[in-house]
Length: 360
Image (cartoon, rainbow, N blue to C red; front, side, top):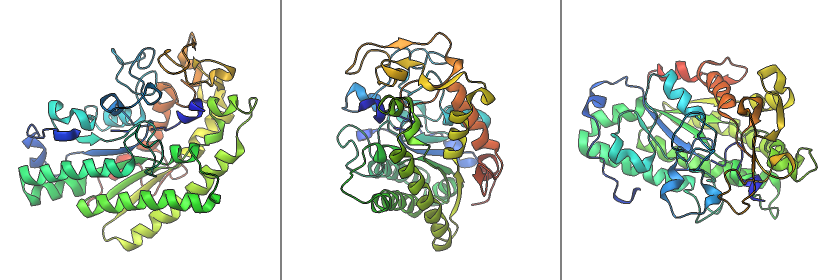
């Protein structure tokens, strides 16, 4: 079942006492400084789970993870860079630091709170990940320190101009509680996400980018459980979630003064590559590059998890999926390009490039 767990975005982020005394004052002297705050799961986790008391099922800080770009591995669930790493490059920023590392790396252009395996619901892999509400709590600590250090006016300016990016919900559905009707369960997930977004808005956030869920039932981990076919129930749950997500964002736009959002259709982008991999430069979208069992759908990449046996492909660029539930760096780069500069068929009403320049 763990093979299912780690997927498109089984995506975490101390700081129990993290010091923010090293924040760069130059940031606050540039009102239009590009700043990113990142929330969610393994789609965005830069290695936050390295710092928490969890198991290796929710970590990826060993080889061959990271080998296409990072040495040593950072904890990213990929052979190299993630979507937000490319976004930082396009925005001419350094990599956005993990929440646990802001004390040593200087807060200059944002913080990444994302945690592999995290969900919108508190009970999703409780005790092993940093759930979305806890990520909000950590964000509030950052804003408190910003206000204390630089005053309300400058910190308010920074927070309102910043962009807040979310990948959240995937793990809630891999952990689906079948005692709930599907739509009721999705409403619970969306309700918790809404609460966190409102919490950020209350702190001064105004510009939000949210990724829809991908076709959850079509990962190698899912196919391994269904003799090579997609698990339709998981993909149906993703569609229900995505529909509710779009409605929720429109409602917040009407309810909250100054609230702006952009919704990225990750479902469409991922489905196109799963259904027609050769069109996008891949040889296969069914099997993972790294893992074991049918379609390498068992989450054993690197041999550090419960299952030790694994196989690694010769050319990672041939594969859409790196492991049982996460894309390759090449795939993430394609996603990032569309998120940054895509047209309204995949991201609307703004792409991320134009969103940065919108007045708060």
